Length: 68
Image (spheres, rainbow, N blue to C red):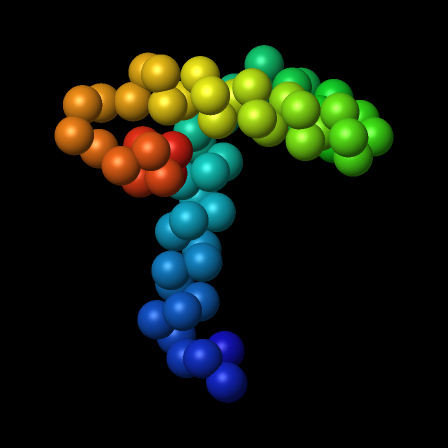
């Protein structure tokens, strides 16, 4: 807080709150399982998820903007 100020701290807290409210038990369970996978499998799963996200993205929205 001393280095970046109150605004950055508030931004981080808001992002964390949004994250906590945005996921339920199934997502948490999935994330935990994902994190336990070896790196090559995590990379593959990430690519699969990003592919699905691109396919289901809103028209006119850049793929990287559709994910966050």
